[in-house]
Length: 191
Image (cartoon, rainbow, N blue to C red; front, side, top):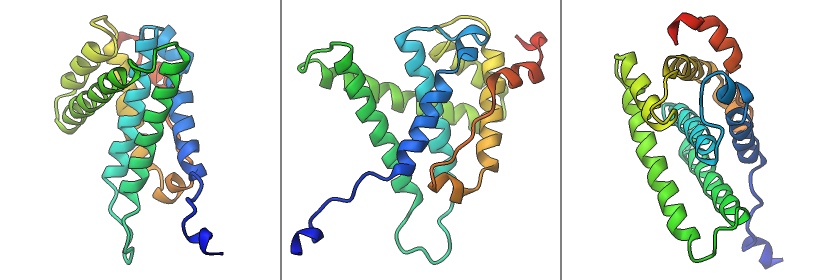
């Protein structure tokens, strides 16, 4: 009976749902076929990083509900980041990266995450929409054209996430906009 006190609780299924939605969104063909994101390991990683940052940005801006003693939002964001790291570690091993090289690669991914997070947050918080285009061109599109479409998608995603109820997010339900619809709405002339 006393061992129940020391047993770890299982992983929160809402975290897996949130992260699964991020990965599914990042893998949508429109990003690679229409937006010009390179369909490579790095291109897919950049899209996952972008969506993780967008969700963490949404969670960070949410105040704790009145009367809550333990903070809920920060552990949710930390759990998503932890699952991201576990997923990246597993993917590296699956791709054949040796056990001795995995920590070095994980450090590289961690540095990329924090660098992208700072760059995206700065670009989203300033009034200059060109800053977001420049950051996306440099990080996601590898200097290629087409960042206006991706910036329109990112701004639509920020609005969609801001409109979502925190209760639903805590339950693992998150909705990102359809990138194909954003391109249609933004118009081809913006590319």
